[in-house]
Image 1 (cartoon, rainbow, N blue to C red):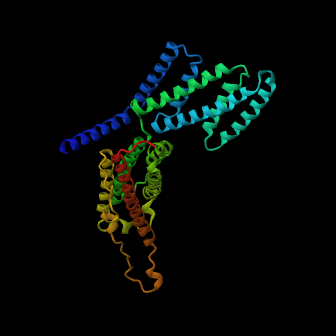
Image 2: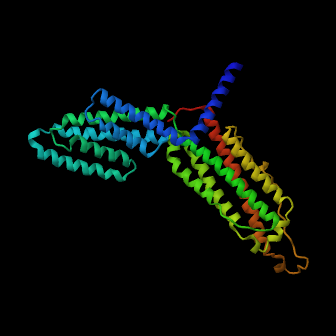
Image 3: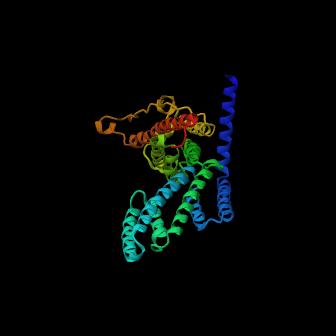
Length: 371
């Protein structure tokens, strides 16, 4: 049993090493895939003298050129295949019309083409677009172009299959890995912002700044989300939840670090609160630790009660000369409690983020196949 466990550990370790290598050299590996696919297509086209072979090259360019990730390539190739088959069936059906009725062929072709183009504004727009293009290829030349239509269809299909195989097995680049990597970067940058803000508050220098890097990281994850979902479809809700947590965290952190706290009436209470600076420092260190755990695939969820910041108890400062109910209403408590609430929200969202990351880690360990 022990050798088996050791072999599994070494396999996981090597996969992790490849993931890091793929993230660092994604464009280089992408160019290797492109070169291999294009060279293979050119070899088959020239060696076997395949008619209309340039359509195979066009297929590879359109599939590989837009998105380099496995999920995106599979989605694009599937839509191209189904669009090609649909357009081919519609186009080939026009060849049932006898050649002497060529005007009937052209009128029906125009009507069907307009109908297919209508669906390019729907959910599967690329599929509809490929169907329309295939119709033009198959039937646009008139009822006497049957041989060319057949070869063009075959070239699109075998080139799409080759492109999918290359994306899956030749230095694959996964959008889900990139998404998780950006999550770790989000945590590291958040740690820097939190640590810097805590230092400013502790030293009472109150220098404000903006968390623009976090916004850029979130934008990149939003662009990756559709492709990552196609790679790990069972965890679609987890990816969406993780992104939503990051958005809320960014909004609260941006408010925390960009507010001019020196202008608030409760600034003295914030600076004098016992244990606040230590709790903020501990939270920032937990962010860094979670980022490291994600990179090493050893994620453990952080419970809300294990975050020191949540155990701090705010105190209401009553003025010494308070003799009326109005005097008891200390306006400085507004910013004081607001500041503590923002810190607590960051801690709460961090706990939720750690749970979502743990779910991703468990899925990765299970090594489930792509859906």
